[in-house]
Amino acid sequence: MARLILVSNRVGNLAPGANQRAGGLEVALAPILKEMESVWFGWSGDVVPAGKVVTRAVESERGAFVITDLAEEDYQEYYNGFANRVLWPVLHYRIDLTEFNRRDLTGYFRVNRHFATELSKMLAPDDIVWVHDYHLIPIAEELRQRGHDNRIGFFLHVPFPAPEVVTVLPNHDRLLPLLLQYDLVGFQTETDIGNFVRYLLAEHRMASRKSVEATDHQLIFTCEGRQTRIGSFPVGIDVEEFQQVARRAAKSSFVRDVVESLDNRGLIIGVDRLDYSKGIIERMEAFERFFLLHPEWRNKVTYLQIAPKNRSEIPEYSELAQAVGAAAGRINGMYGEAAWTPIRYLNRAYSRSSLAGLYRAARIGLVTPLRDGMNLVAKEYIAAQVPEDPGVLILSRFAGSAAECKQALLVNPYDPDSVAHAVAAAMAMPLAERRERHHAMFETLRQNPTHAWSTRFMQSLQLSAGPAGALEPGPVSATRRSEKHERNLLS
Image (cartoon, rainbow, N blue to C red):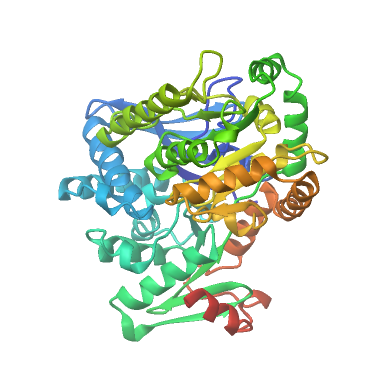
């Protein structure tokens, strides 16, 4: 039976008894790791002197891993440099924060070559390779150059922006077409697919030798005889399992203490990594507008923002941490009272169970990223609610999860007044409407559990191009049954 080789920048937490990171890749991949013999390959998290880089196999209670170190130069150029100061901001529409230099691009390709070299040593001919996210776009090309014709899939967890934005990326024509060396390229939403295909049609140099056809709700992009399947695979959660976690967690002393401390005030919760794409400052400004426009709610609600620090060594992130702290302090100083703090702002991480209990206790889930590939916090908030008395999800229309959570109060996170009015509407929403909205979203999310995401991706990958680069015969390659689908994606 073929092995699954997972490849990502970081692997799961290898420490004995460690909790899975809430909302992280570990949670999403857990079902497929149980079903298939697998090896997870990635960076160890260690930065070592040049010449001291070691690649090693690790067996843990979570499975088999192969991890490799990064030299200091590689870490700075590949990770802190091109991945997080060029690719990340461009893919999240923050062109203003992009800082490009050719040395970082060179380091990005160098680390991907190192990863491919180490992978090449362990690959068997029938292994299936699944590469995750923007850090590792060149992996398939590097493996092909080393003679590997394995099925290789790629999944982008973050947004793929419109061609007018992504072409700002220096050397985009060198990097992004490398995605066509994968047999399957997966995105979170159909909007991402449309952006990617429009980019390829407009920018790929082989204009006279490329075509796109639709089949079975996916697209097949053909270029120079090689076919790449392109599909949407929104990451889901197991809503019923998470509901049970939340039900148990709500009885914990931790959650009970938090609820008691609110003194019967309504709880508004936001949970995000401390990242500029999450719109935390804009969210706090909207919360301030809420008090200005709806003063009757002062001293009746508390906004809990949990935002663990992230990439603190990158200047933009340390500046963001200071700005968010300053915004929380200013709003608390302006509106707070001796017995009430409007915003509780915390920079520490909590377990998935603890967060589930807090979601269940919250009257509003405030999920307003400026851009997000999916955002599982929105889905977890819905899953955690008490069906008989659910809270209200306020969700950015620019989060991938908005496509499934249509009954949320969808807002423009750049418009603080609209978010403020949504908060007021959520606090005053009748129970019958809250139940109706929650039930509709819960049922939608139930149709896309975690295992469905990985299963659908793997099924599509196994039906994608074989060693010769041509689609294998079978019902999936039938023909263009879905021209309307294709037009929708490209419009």
